[in-house]
Length: 215
Image 1 (cartoon, helix red, strand yellow):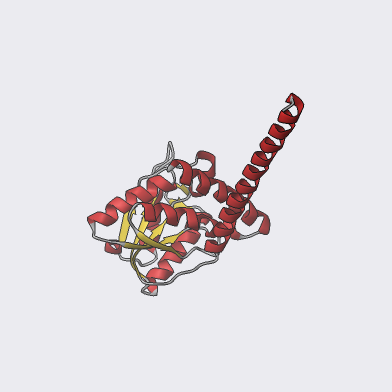
Image 2 (cartoon, one colour):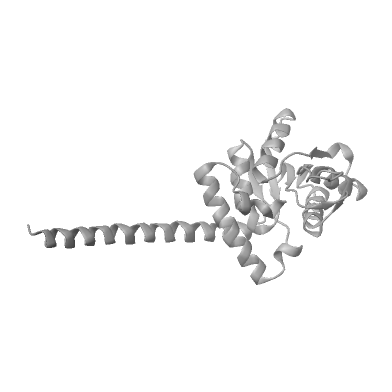
């Protein structure tokens, strides 16, 4: 076989491998994005032991609009008998006087949720840290089922993490708040959550910049 023929065949093989790899990557990314969008549309009101409210920013004990929307959704689930407890999650940023979990608990108590039905988990600087902390609390209380309350696009990644921590989990996302208002915002979070979920599947770790949705 002449060298030029061998090199020509080798180039064709390399091109096919590269194109095949690109096609697989497109299918994986596209399929993940579709699942993020699909689960974002689910609102499962099956009875659960608790609602897990993923943390978001708070200002000296006052929840941000994003966090308040999640808390209000969880409060309604509790009032409707969908959940027996509400877990508020999230740690504190440097200089904060309150954790996100504390701010959530205060907000719920002020709106009539009994203190003994709130599980304050003031830990976690990202989704995975919060999920792991609340899963540990759930095991202490023999709570096994959970409905995840967050923004729609965050639902799949949070549910996946909860299931990996041993919880039987489903989702009931909020439909209000700044993160769900415009189509541009929705597309931004779908892209970010797609990247965050793929990173988590590969590394079983929070994805840094992808995880800002709950900070």
